[in-house]
Length: 301
Image 1 (cartoon, helix red, strand yellow):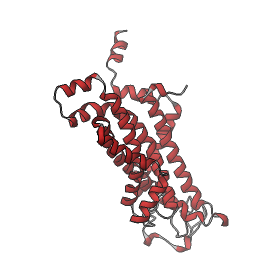
Image 2 (cartoon, rainbow, N blue to C red):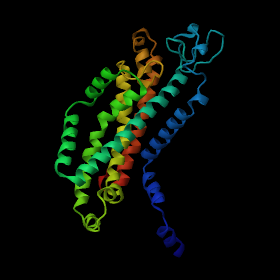
Image 3 (cartoon, rainbow, N blue to C red):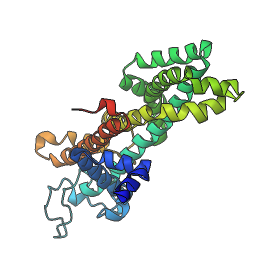
Image 4 (cartoon, rainbow, N blue to C red):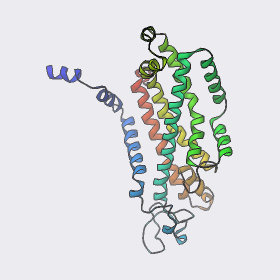
């Protein structure tokens, strides 16, 4: 009896979070799937049968081969077939996942930091500062995200850095509005008034007191926005305005095979599409469970 009460007393927040998170079989399955996808993306150079972007490794004679078809040298090398350039689709998908996930995570983290900073500043300062920041956020949110990204990429051109900037411009306002709402609630509480009365600087109050209490809902939004950013990047790359052909993501791989769908060469677009679908679904499953764990009042019955 004493041992049991002792284990409960010393349970760390991390262990309690893990126990609550993995209480859902669906969330656990999503987490395992996401972990496998991330590991495949990280170790793509070692897992891929070939470097799909090394021109010296490509053979035009292997162009548009069906899954499982024997190559020109009599060997079974391409389990998922090849594209129009003779690239192994399995290798191209692994590298494509790597770029798509990197772009989605990088843009989300940058947008989170920017939006959180501006939102806390607006919620704590109030007055003209709050009005100015929130009106810019309102203007940004009044336009469809894909329209803003299309305009920015049309002006700046293609590239990993440029599409990350475009995705940051699309996402930051969500975090700013959420952080500002949370800061307005926390600002009226006694511990903030006490910190102000003690003469603490606004920067220290926002960093040490407001930030920890405003962060949980933003983490959930960020988890969902990673999937949204990956989907938006895939859409832009499919339209030819995202990443260049030298750095193809899953969206560009889907676009490369779109013209061959009617001729029966489905695998060039189909398998990258399945990879994109599984990645987005896995992230959303993890994000939904993360929302329930961080805010038990939102748990589904």
